[in-house]
Amino acid sequence: MKILKQLSSFFFVFLVCNPINNIKANEPVDIWNIEKKEIPEDQSIIQNKNEDSTDVIQGIKIEQQNEKILVNNSLSVSDIKLAGLYDPQENGLSIDMWSNSNGEDIKSTLKNLTSKDLSKFSEKILDIALLTNSYIPNTNISSKEFLDFKFDYLIKKENFDLIKEFLIKNPNLIEGEKLIKFYVDHYLSNSQLDKSCEIFEITNLISSDYLTNFKMYCLIHQDRRDEAQLLFDLKTELGDLDKFFVNKFNILMGYKKSNEELSEKNILYFHLSHKTIKNFEYEPKIETPKFIWNYLATSNLLKNAEFVDIENEEQIKLIEIATNDEVYKEEDLFKLYMRFQFDINQLLNYRNAYKLLEDYEARALLYQRLLLTSEIPKKLNLLSLLKKSFDQSNLPNAFDEKLASLLKNIPEDEIPSNYTTFFMKNKEPEKLAELKIKLNNKVFHQSKVLNYFQNKTSLPQVEKETNDLLKKIKKNKKYVFSLKDIIAVESLKSDGVQILRKYQKLYDYNNNLPSEINTMIVNGETGLVLLKISEIIGEDNLEDLGIESVDYIVSILNELKLVDLRNEILLKVLPLKV
Image 1 (tube, rainbow, N blue to C red):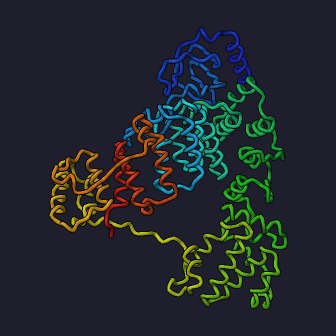
Image 2 (image 1 turned 135 degrees about the vertical axis):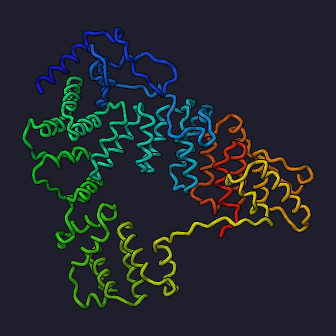
Image 3 (image 1 turned 45 degrees about the horizontal axis):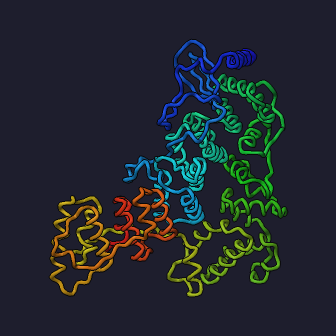
């Protein structure tokens, strides 16, 4: 340890004595910055003579033989020009999709969208808009503000594979520390330390004390103690380390004996407490943070239902809250309810008896009475009383899986009419079979032209098919063009299908997009237009949209030439399915 400390001191002195201007070799390159930059003055470099392989240690880049150590204390987010996940060409977009948009419009639309429970397709459009690799807008919105929308959206989605992929493709985003912290905390709170640690092999630049400490612990966990010690010594030289972490670091490195010091400050410190306290025990309370509940549950540190004191009201309520927060299994909660003792009169006269008990005791009584009941109307009555009791105690999630499971055992055709709504609302959702498209050449929007929107036929072929169908329709004096027919024809025309002149007046159609949208399209504000489309769809499924709304959205997508998104809408709305 002394040798390593002396080594880091030498590096630190060498840094002070050697001006940055003299060291230009092997300059790190910002892959997102198209313009070549000099190393900023706030980056410190220490260099020895040998040259060879490179390792990355938490916010400090070390080239082993060259011993070039780059300590990056602050990276300006204003230098970031590109940030994203998807290639723009994947969805027919441009890298300039945000460049001409007003930041005030972007911010207000995004704030509105992120406050809604968006439908699957609406969320898909928002995904594409926010996560496509593009230049960052710079009018009335800062780079940090725009990136924060991306990060907050990824965090809200809780798709950790997507977060990891984003970090892989954007390794130099210092602002990405918010994502990194969310990622490592999630996996550690679920007792998956290896998953937390793997992210540090992906990201290049980290500056926060918390993530630096996390990285040091990961290095110890991975038996890379020399690297952990070097990083620890460097951080000690550059600034004060947290006293709690220093103590735990020394224990983990074997320099000190274990102690009983416990911290609930964050999940890392709680985990370190668990690992360094002999015979670790922890009794959660009502105010205990959810990340600790998760950690206790996934580390098998929560009491089993059979060991919970049913005379202790606080313990019972804690278990109910933990179940509602999905860190305690519903099945275990109901095993706990089975341990309560009730006399025969309470079980027989449950309708009155449960009202005289504490809420958690009432739920135990109702559940035990349910298990003794075979009559379907009475079962449904007990289930509805149980559901109401959980809801009134603000525990709506503590009885959703169990309720759905119990309802599944009741034949739907035996449900009394007064419980139909309750049954349908709370039963386990049925998996809908995927319907197949059935072509019907008597109706244009259900005809074989749909094969084109499925990429099954070529443009010349669908052009011939379209004109052949229009020829038959013209002969049929009773045929009336529906708006769905018009949407299909206009989409084909947008893609280059030539309609013969004699069929061009089979229907009247005025496609007048609002001037606001038209202006955005002309200005190349594709990102903002996508946000507006997502806003229009909102919480609705495509199948539930009015056909006028579908026409409006498809018209915009035709103007933008975003055929994949348009085709997905058309194939949801137009075909006959069986």
